[in-house]
Amino acid sequence: MNIFPWKKKKDFFTAEEQQRIIEAIRDAEHMTSGEIRVFVESRCSYMDAIDRAAELFFQLEMQKTDDRNAVLLYVAMKDRQLAVFGDEGIHDKVGNEYWNNEVHKMISNFNRENYAAGIVEVVKDIGVALTKNFPFNNDTDKNELPDDIVFGK
Image (tube, rainbow, N blue to C red; front, side, top):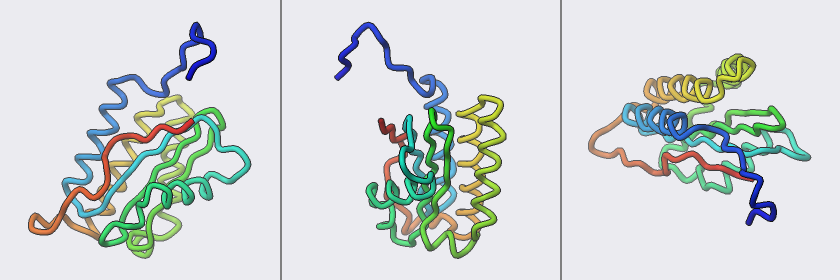
């Protein structure tokens, strides 16, 4: 509920940007059994972004994918924090350096205020890594998690 109805809540992305992010998730997931989610909120108060990403990962029950190959991109817009959290199946394949490189790519785009483009680029990169390690199998693959962007507070 908005107690100040004359103050419109600012959206993080335009409708077109949201659609581009969702399409990038869907395109990436069509090549892999892996799952990708994007979680965006205003603040990451009182904790490190990777800890918040891990907390949300488990709240969203992303660890329940068959191959433990889900990845969460986390962004706290106003606090300018972000993280990428991969489940043990994909993390064991790509390691910390890979995640750190993806975070740096997002930061580079975010520094130019290209938020949606930064997320889309990293979603595509993660899709490639997931495809290499967990290729799509037409007989067994199913979409285990929703593709929409999750917006927090």
